[in-house]
Image 1 (tube, one colour):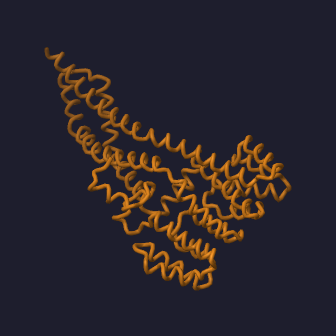
Image 2 (cartoon, rainbow, N blue to C red):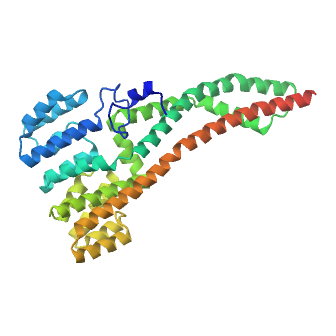
Image 3 (cartoon, rainbow, N blue to C red):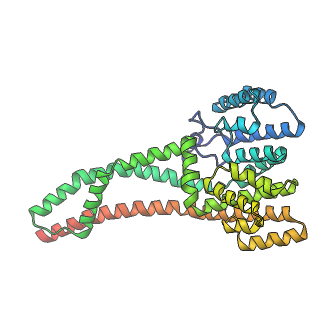
Length: 367
C-alpha cells in the first residue's frame, strides 16, 4: 500500500490498475485510456467510412502529452499516402504491440472494423488488476529494500566487519561460521555494489522507455517464460477465431500473423505452421507440433469442424488458454513479495547472527 499523497503520482486519475508507471510525472507515456480513445475513433471511422486524416487531425487538438506528437506523426504519414498500419507503426507507442497487430491483421484481411472492436473489447476484458497490483507491490518493496539495504550493507562491510576481524585476530578467537559468512557476503556485496544501481537503472529504463521494455518482453522473457508464451498463443487462437467468425480464410490470416507478429518466438512457430500448410499438412496438428495447441484442443477443433461451430470453439479455447495463463501469472506474481521479504529477512538474520554470535563468543572467552 502507498500513502494517498504518493499514490496519485504513481497512477493517473481514473486510470486502470494495469496502467503501471509514473504517468502523471513522466510526459513521454501514453496511457491506456488514450489508446482506448484512439481505437474507438478508428473503429467508428472504419464502420462509418469516415476519412482518417481529418478525424485524427481534430483528435490531435484534444490530446495531451506525447500522444499529441505521436498522432501528428500518424496524420503526416497518412497524408503522404501510407496505410493505417504503416502510419501507426511509424509512431511507436501510440498503440501497444497487440493493438498494432490487430490493426495490421484487420487491414490486410478485410475485417478492420471487427478487429478494432475486438481490440477494444480485449483491452477492457483481459487486464488483470490483481496481477498489476502484485507487480507494483513487489517493485516498490524491492526498490525500498535496495535503497535502504545497500548503505547498511556497505557500512557493515567497510566499517564493522574489518574491526571484528581485527579483534578476533588480536584475541586469537575463532570466528563463528555465521560471522565468516556475513563478512564474506558483505565483502562481496561491497565489491559488487555497482550491480544494484545498474539493475535499478535497467529496470527503470524498461518501465519508462518502450524499446527496452519490448526487447525484454519479446526477445528475453518470451522464449524462457512459459506463461507469457501461453498468453500469446491464446492471442493467436483468438485471432483465428475472429477470422472464422467474419468468414476470412484461415491460411491467409495465419500468413499475416507469421509475417507481422511482434514476438519472435511466436512468429517462428507461425512460419513453421504456414510452411506446413503450403506442403498440404492439416492446420490444427501443425499448430500442436509447435505447442500452439494442446492435444485435447486439437480434438475439440476436429469435432467442431464436423459440427460446424468452429468460430465459437476457437473463441472458447482462446478464452480458456488466456484465463489459465493469467491465473498462473497472478500466482507467480503473488509469490514475488514473499520471496523479496524472505531474502531481506535472510540478510538481516545473517547480519544479526554473525554479529551477536561473535559477541557471545568474545564474552565467553573473556569470562
